[in-house]
Length: 386
Ligand code: COS
Image (cartoon, rainbow, N blue to C red):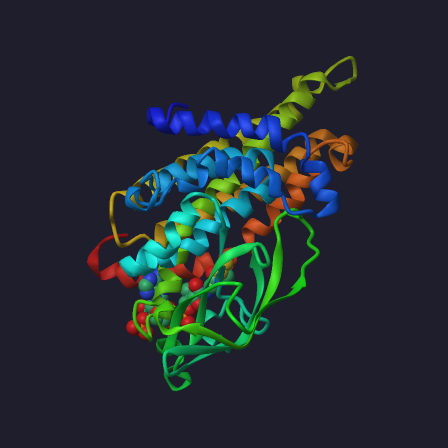
């Protein structure tokens, strides 16, 4: 289908396809086994200027939007979700700065991020806090010209590899979520350390680690916005980034669909290619239809977000929920279509199926997305907006 991508978006898509074919495809299975960070691929992407995509031109960026990011993330995700997660998590980590940073803070960090000199990471989740984001225990106390952070963040994508961490911590326990604040933290800050590196089911080349703060001292001017804005910053960040998770779902679904079609056209049983059997062709048709429906929703939401609307929570959650459920279903069906071959590591679909699972979990489980959507349905009912 023609989604009327701009000339620039088609160029970005082609560029990612080239990187996918030449740099990602040949090594993805090996990276999946070793769990090694895809440093070389990330350098190639930085050289291709992909990290500059959504940053304003005054900070060395291309000035693109959510739709541009979705096009790129989708294409990369066709090849390897571990690589696309490493890439996309930098934007997740950068959104708080982009949305709420002062000109001085942006000047200090955005040019390096745009040049791909260092990656970013977002730190909300903690050992005791996942879905219930209002329960975080990490604290930040103002002492003179510094904040002192104590606590730890868990399952942080790009943990140990990022040069900038945006961290949500409590500056006033008595105020609950209204006492949260957001901070820019670097690995050089005294008291910052990286803890356990996780061993995961999928997206194994994406680094996931614990980040620990032991009397970690950061300059006072690393506070984003004002004290008390932290929960809002975290929610707005997730609203902004969730269409990109949807785009990851579309990409991995499209990648698995392509593998399954290719296999079904060459695999012969009962004297003919298995694609000719209605049972198999029907599964492929459903896979293709759901993938296209997911793409349509993700693109529509991305374009809506780029139009400047501030009311994106509901549709962002819908894009993430729908496209990632589709991704899990489509990758599972790809394994089914390919049967025993699909289950073996000789073919990429078993990795795609393992990788896809995280999409239903991170950046808010799909149960949380349903909660966000239903809350918004209730909130806007009287405005007749449903
Ligand atoms: N944008 C702006 N403000 C928002 C918001 C949003 N998207 N969502 C909630 N808020 C505001 C509310 O309006 C409310 O403000 P007031 O205190 O002024 O009334 C405040 O934040 C608290 O909202 P709410 O009562 O809905 O918070 P809950 O504790 O019920 O939690 C959910 C809300 C479940 C949506 C939140 O905890 C969440 O998103 N959890 C998932 C976290 C997640 O995605 N983790 C993944 C790790 S990050 S990769």
